[in-house]
Image (cartoon, rainbow, N blue to C red; front, side):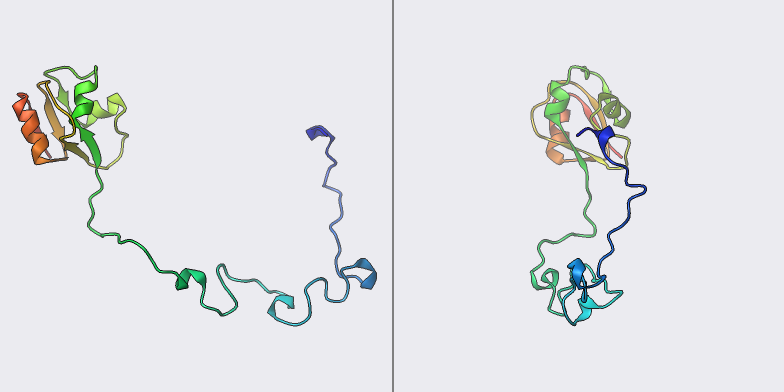
Length: 147
């Protein structure tokens, strides 16, 4: 069967349930005998377990989310060393990192980390930097501006 061969449902009638015992959906309409679920207008809340303590409340909660955590995008020295588009003597700032496709235009601060070695003399302008990364950049003859 192809998509264009499917019958149209515009004029199709909806199934009428609960119209006598011969329809197989008569009397209680498949809802059973008494109880809240058999009544008209019943709708259950998500996670409701009939008054029993819900599983989301029975299971223990995990983890801790600190309110003052600073999320930053890491920038390793190995990336600056291995990238051919960054030459010795260049200034690496937010605009240059966006041009390289390393970061997107967002407000997450960039943090310079000391992963890898650096031999290029660079001027780096970032929001955050580790002390060991600053030492490695200065040992290579470059400078780090935090701000």
